[in-house]
Length: 489
Image 1 (cartoon, rainbow, N blue to C red):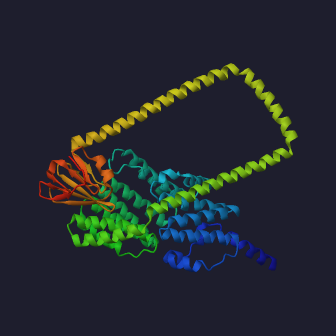
Image 2: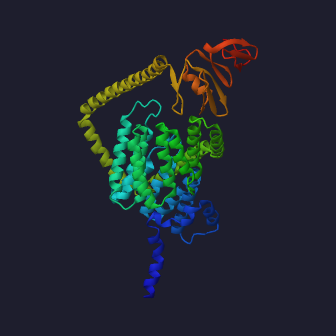
Image 3: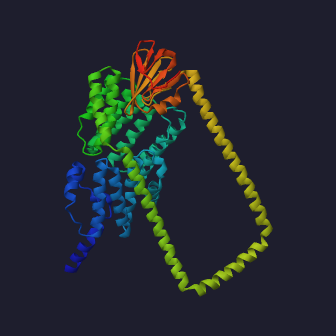
């Protein structure tokens, strides 16, 4: 009996560490900052505990939107579980790592190696929950490739919807209410993009049923925001503001900074649309304060560096394996030499026998390769030409540009553009001012030749210039615009 008890306690850490969610702690979920303070004083009692603790540390940093640090700990945890031959938590961590990496800008440059690894394990185990998660992430990848500005590739949305539906098919075979809620929410977001707002809201209502059951406050926050966003895009700004307020009232312990930044930006835009300038300024300040705190570019660079180092380490391990093989080869070189000589004779015989056929095949392949290269070159040139023609066509036929917030501004009404920090103020003849994030160097590329940059902070429509004096110009509406030294029309 004593021996059985000893065996149980020796094996229990391994049993405990088999499932990744076994390491979840209420403290890290409710107050990740407090958990990180106490976690620094805890020393793991075993290698399994160390790997599990790295995972929870990464999870806590992820909740605090410190994805770069979260990625470091996730990779440490994954390596730890792999060394211990614990396949299940190591493979499930691939999903968490993919989520961290895919949350960054320019995600496409990182590839999908971790998601591919997770999907392969999901198929291997036949787990409905893993398959649902994998299809959900693959659908999000496809959805993100939709051109939200030009909206010229609607087939992407059809593909994304099919992937989300496949994920929902597997999720409905599980008891995971939170996962079902996420998939319904994602389908709602897709319908909002299609501007099918009634259908989108039905999906959000369905998602909220599952979210309420799961008790996940963060998902409820997102659900209220999505519901408000469907009214914002409607546009029904008063109703959108009510849903945004509901979202704002929910205290969320995780993903707080970036999530609230998105909410404040939308609330700023909604209040601006109803001409409530005091509230617009209030939420603009909230948004700008958070935007200055969140170092998006620094995190992107850090995550890129971490990912590169991880890939290099994998290659080093493969090289080390080859070195071991090389050493083994030297120890048995006589046997290998004989085998290689026999293989060489066989290869030589095969080569001489099929020499003519092989030469013809290579020649044909070379011709096909050249044809393919020429084809790709022609297609690339054609694509660039079509893109440039479409851009010119848009300016000529529509006489308008679409801002990043999807507002259409007609060029005949656009008097001038003013840059301030990372934002652009758009001034039109109707007295409306549009406030969007951007750079002068980007927007001037979208404008026709009658728009000129007269100052480092101004672009002006020459059709509205009344006179140019030293240091300033006067517009037809009597506004004065500064001009750079030496500026000439």
